[in-house]
Image 1 (cartoon, rainbow, N blue to C red):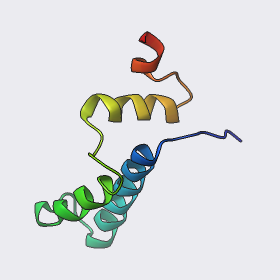
Image 2 (tube, rainbow, N blue to C red):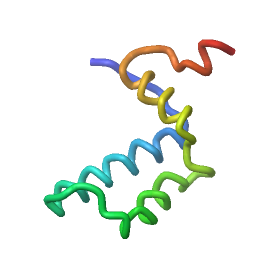
Image 3 (cartoon, rainbow, N blue to C red):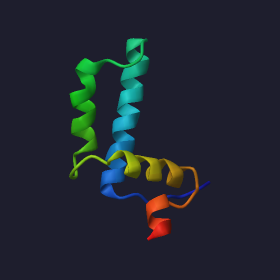
Length: 73
């Protein structure tokens, strides 16, 4: 089992992604742009939502790799 540490903003993004996946499964079809505001609200609960680079870094970290930005700093 792997334990990870995430910031509050990273946690918000993970929660938003899970809710989006849940919504996708409940609807039986992909992507409903009418619901994007709900995902944005969840992802920005603790400040600005992660940008694309931060999301990529979070994905790398969840896969057991060093975050690209933190590794290069």
